[in-house]
Amino acid sequence: MNVYAVKHKDERIRATSRSGGIFTAISDLFLDGGVVYGCVLDENYNAIHVRTENKTGRDLMRGSKYIQSRLGDCYKQIKNDLEDGRHVLFSGTSCQVAGFRCFLKKDYNNLLCIDIVCHGVPSPKVWKTYLDWISKGKTIINVDFRNKKDFGWRDHVETIFCKNKKINSQVWTYLFYSHNILRPVCYECPYKSIDHPGDITIADYWGIEKACPRLDDNKGVSLVLVNTEKGSLYFEKAKNDIVWYKTRIEDSMQHPLIEPEKVPDERNQFWKDFENKDFSYIARKYGNYTPLWRRTLRKAKHLIKKVLGKD
Image (cartoon, rainbow, N blue to C red; front, side, top):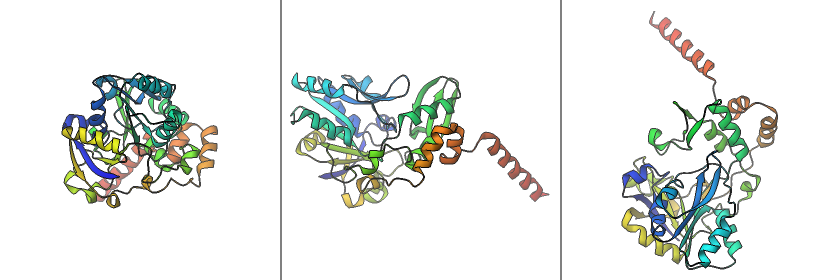
């Protein structure tokens, strides 16, 4: 395994990518006669895996989706493409890549698999309930799970775009990092280590300030683990489009590369509350949400104290 810190040379691509743009650099190698499979959000903002042969479809695959994706019949589609001699890139979580390899039962020279380091995949049911709650009946026109444009790479703020309104929130962020909403199997994930089923493994490069300070500009850096000879071959081909530095795995360790998240003590209570309470209660108790009236009251109290202090 070789370890790299990577950013795309095209700053526009890096700005529209979740981290450093390595997925775009590698997938570009497949869009001249090949096929790319990856995760997008459908019209109802569910995460699904789809097939594309062009950059427009591929660009929708950029960015993290902090929910479980539906694979549908992707595995069958990919196998048909491979048997037809098409060069195929498949990207997904480690368990999806491992499951796909088991489905194929053999390796294909014309297949490259990229797996994505993840904490675990949250429940689509909670996600749908959250969207209904935060949009308050308004039509949603876009979702950004991590708004890097407005808040930088390190901050984690989700933005829900409605007609004539943009809602910035961290309720989903808090729910995600509480780990209450992860699938039960995620707490026993066998891929929470440096051993991964993908030819190439990619992630946000948390710890870049230590591993490669020269790339630390809060605009996004990709951590790239090249796990196989095939992965190395494609990484070499992508080097024309990226700035890369070889780094040490010892300086690159983040929790998902060490062990799975532990089952939270409050998980059972969370799900009882979720099934029996309205989502405002969930947002306040588990999502660090403060209602507008309470925030307004706090500001008013602060202003009164400031005025009295001056008097």
